[in-house]
Length: 167
Image (cartoon, rainbow, N blue to C red; front, top):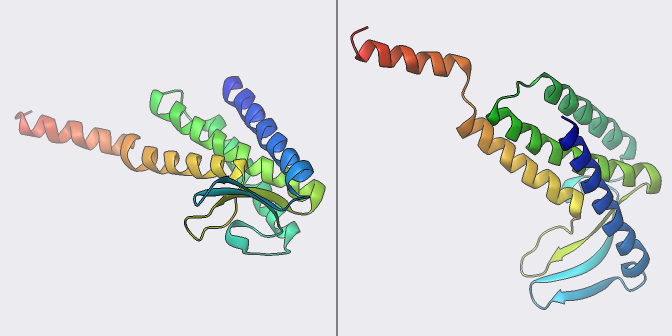
């Protein structure tokens, strides 16, 4: 459990470092083309959640994030140490690192710093913490839907196999 926590701290620091660079170097200029027609670095003060929903509801967002963080930590502590659940812990660690990174912004600035902008599609500007949350959520969904088997499913498949063998 200690290694995922250390990695979460490292990811949090990376998120905050990139946001600091955006704040100090990008905010004064607003936007810089990174790959023409594909991606820009654009400074945005996001005062809402994803896609700008709940704009200006900082306390509600902080409470929701705190609840999510507590639930993630509690779930990680209760998970068995099987291979499948270790991968689930890693995906939850990514979500936790992203949530804490954006919570820190809301607590200390009142807004989240976003700066990655895809210019080839209409998509909201985002940051490293958002990337962590998205990757962690996709990984978690794949694990829960396709990898981790419920004990009942395992028993049922064994029983079905035993019945087919005449046992």
